[in-house]
Image (cartoon, rainbow, N blue to C red):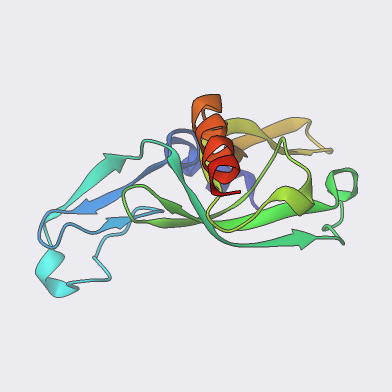
Length: 150
C-alpha cells in the first residue's frame, strides 16, 4: 500500500471507525458514503461510528503461504468477523494457534504491527483480533451439566 494512502486511512485503521446509517440502522466498516442497505435514501443520513471492537468469527481460514515480506508470520489465521453491531470485517486472528480458530469464537480488537517499509523504516500498525477468554464460571457450569447428564 502506498504511504500517502496508508496515512490518510489512519483514523479508520487505528480506531475501528466506520459509518452508521440512521435511516435503516445499518453499520459499515470501512466507512461508506452511501448505505448498502437503503442506498440513495441514506444520503445525508450516515454518521461516523466508533465500533466497540468485539464480535465473533463467522468464517475462517489459515494462510500457509504468506505474501513476500510476511513469511515470518505464517501460517496465520484470517477470519471474517461479525462485529456486535452487525458490520463484517476481515482480519488476522492473533495470540492463538491457527487450528484453534473456529466459527462462533468471540474475539476483540487489538492494536498490532502490520508490517514495515524496509526502504524508509516506516512501521505500519493496525487492527487485528484476539480471542476473548470466556469466564471460567461458565466452563465449570457446562462441565457440571455434562456430569449430571451422565
